[in-house]
Amino acid sequence: MFLSVKGLTKAFGELEVLKDINLDIEEGNILAIIGPSGSGKTTLLRCLNVLEVPNKGEFTFDDGFKVNFDKPMRKKEITELRRKSGMVFQSYNLFPHKTALENVTEGPLIVQKRPKSEVIELAENILNKVGLGDKMNLYPHQLSGGQQQRVGIARALAIKPQLMLFDEPTSALDPELVGEVLKVIKDLANEGWTMAIVTHELKFAEQVSDQVIFMDEGQIVEQGPPEAVLRSPQKERTQQFLKRIL
Ligand code: ADP
Image (tube, rainbow, N blue to C red):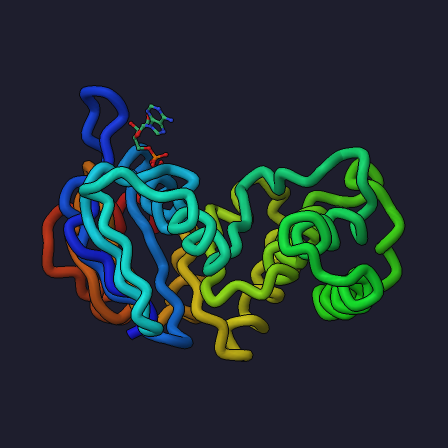
């Protein structure tokens, strides 16, 4: 087990957005998170990266690292948790005044303080891998949405996370650009990365994931292998959701 999440709860003021989430992610597995808008999918992903700090619950990692959110978090714990995962955002969130290469080197250089020559070589390799070897010196506005998102993926990979988190990585893209981004994610899946992906692309979820969770109103309604959850869901809420979007 790479990560075990127990009793995760998150509220914004009075609004309880995540209610007692229990979830296991196996090493090398792909978890797809589906569900209607507003069900808490993005918040769950942001809690895994502590971009949002949970109110309650516990994360246990396979290396023995454990965080309990019932107590106030120490800065060291937040830093260690952040280092474990790399986040790819729906709207890319690239630095507009930095080139593709500089966007990718920023994390390892500034945050991780790794040596410059090593970081540049690493960033070039990763940008080549996502098919942007010839675009490294261009700025985000000179790139298509699909290319920008591939820079976003390269940037997350550059910090060498143990877990990759994708928040609806293709939902801002024109339909003809979706495929190139999904292909990069599929390649990462084949390389054995551990990933959690919030997605509306059910066909993609079925092809790449090992486990699907269906969320509604801040709870996990149903979870299991993709063929079970997507093809023969047991719960009525899952059935209704799938009927609506298929
Ligand atoms: P989903 O990703 O499934 O669409 P979200 O996790 O984005 O759902 O949102 C779940 C609920 O939490 C929504 O009702 C949303 O309005 C609310 N929410 C999300 N982020 C915040 C925030 N920072 N402050 C207040 N409410 C929020």
